[in-house]
Length: 187
Image (cartoon, rainbow, N blue to C red):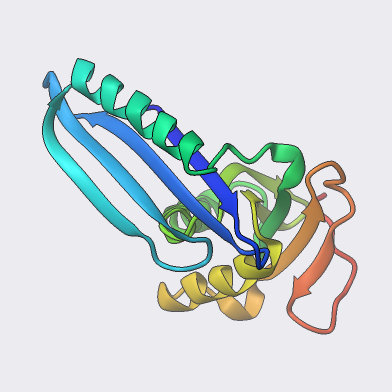
């Protein structure tokens, strides 16, 4: 499933996003074409077209990409984004850590995607920690979104730590939750 994800910076500095994808139905030639758009950090609006064949899906993606370019939307280079690390205490490996990782990935992936706030690029275990590495276009909006998702899905907010770093400096993490800030590491 190929996804086209584009952003446009408004005059006030805020970001809007548009994304589209074609997804084939399991064991079928047809699928659905989906467009998702909105202001980064807010719940998006979604429209879909069902029972689309692969060729039509490809042409719809091409038309979507052309319309985005015409409207001033473009892919946001990784260098212009930030790393957000959602971190919980967890021993390396083990059933508890695996369940925590799987649940956190499932919860945060959907919550962030529907708000244009980024993607989970990797999960790692540090010394006694589970780390979800999130590539985000908006470091200020991703922190409250992560906290809201954790709260809504009964993950342990009291143990969540969030660090933010520029894309090019992933080791320059600054703790943004909880306060007061403490040194933050994924090791």
